[in-house]
Amino acid sequence: MFIEAQTAPPQDRIKLHSGDLQQSIFESYNPRNDATRLQELTHLTPIEQEYYIKENVMAYLEEFAGEIPLKQLAGILRPDGSLEMCGANVTNMYRYSAQLAGPNSREAAEAQGMDAILEGINNGANRAVWISPPKMADYGFAFTFVADSFNQELGGIPIREFLPRYNEELNSIETSREIYRSVQTAAGISNIHPDNLHSYEDFLRNPIFSYTQNHEDLQFIYDRVGISTGDIAYSEQFRKEVLPQIEPWLREYTKVVRELREHDHFENSKKTIQLEEKAQLLIGAMFNTARVVRRLLIEDHSIISHEKDISMMKLTGNQWADERELLAAAYVLAKHEPLVISGGSNCPVTQIASSESSVIANMRSGFDFVSSMQSFGLEANQGCGFQGCPINKIHFHCPGEKNGRKCNHAISGTNECSECGLTSKAWAEKTGQQECT
Image (cartoon, rainbow, N blue to C red; front, side):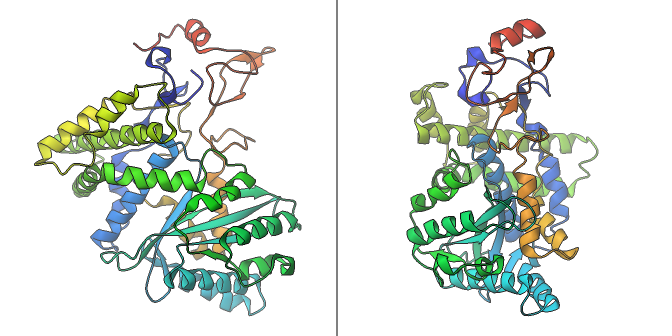
């Protein structure tokens, strides 16, 4: 098949090996990796560690179960106005860079803009948009900050930052200005008129704020940067629906990962294997729950009947009497459909807060905050990892042949390659692999 595993009828699925059209989700999400990463976050409080575990799991579910092609960073805004990522004070870092570069530098404009964003969120704004025109190549970024409510246990406001990229020629700001104008028209809160934006620094100094809880007004940003299936409105609705349903399993998963961290999980002891299997069961339940939520949101009844999906949802979001009942419900959800990703994820095994850590590492190496975020954004937007491929939604490249050469045409949303005509049935016959039953 040439679509995601969850969007084709079971009888059309092909049983393939890793590197072909389907890949186990555990090849790209490994609980042992979470345990290893937790060892690097021991400087954080248990609540903060749990926050990054949750964000890590949700990022994976959003991308591969929700099919949302939006990469994001997570952080905590403290009451004193400082932004922390993985316990590191990012605000001190970018202010120090600005001090070294001088008052008229790009770094100073960046610090002014970030200070304004954090102050605005602390004063009640629930999101901010920061337009960054092309600086080194033919693209810019529309950094979008989404703030949740103040979290008493975390001691701050959880913040997520989306990093959509848009095309624009180097040394041009016209597209950036039009995007800015559109955002300002929808949000209505900015300190400058778009016609008065004349430089890269002007954009950095003047972020745009919004105080609305309705995310629909930002859809056009993602339309402009080429993301139509994963706009922020759907992303926020997906998260809102999924989190309450998986909360008991997510809480239990956090406990299992903490316990796994205490063991030498590089050795396959009986206890380690048991913990890993338990963690995989919980991940499987959360992954399939997220798939069901996606189908219900978009009213997709082509794979599993609406009635069966509704029946599965009755097993989610409950406060189970004991661990045995919780795991029994998780088992049913994990078996609801195969835990595979079509085309494979083509990405390294997910690590807790690895994206935030990479940004911090870049800043400690001398990069400014914007450049550090852009570096992560460029890595994230590579999508499938196929050289030269600009597509950043879930897809893969056709394994068929055309004119004696491998086709490699990008496939998404169909059972037949439009370039070479290869079908799932023909692929099964050619390789001798059988369809799943």
